[in-house]
Image (cartoon, rainbow, N blue to C red):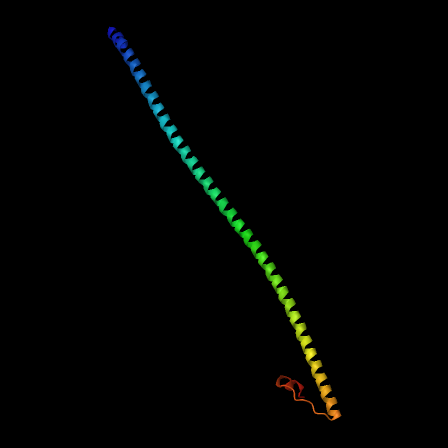
Length: 146
């Protein structure tokens, strides 16, 4: 039995020492794995943060682009409306000018017709008196000849 006690007396501190070493090794391994896991988590968080920042920048750029297009579209619509207004004003002015020209042409035609009637009346009176009338110039002769 003495052997068992000797073995027990020697094995107990050796086992205790092995237990302490194993515990230390397990604690170091756990700390190492925890550090690696935390590093991976930090890298993942950094990637997520970078992707979030990139997405936010892309969204901001898209918003700015959309705002620019909306501004351009609004300006284009305003310019088109102004152009339509100018065209309408020009068309109205052109219509007034055409009406005025038509009135002037009608007035000219009435004056011309009245002048021809008057000249014919004067020629008839001269012919009734037996007097000769002067020959009209070429542009008027075609209008006076019946």
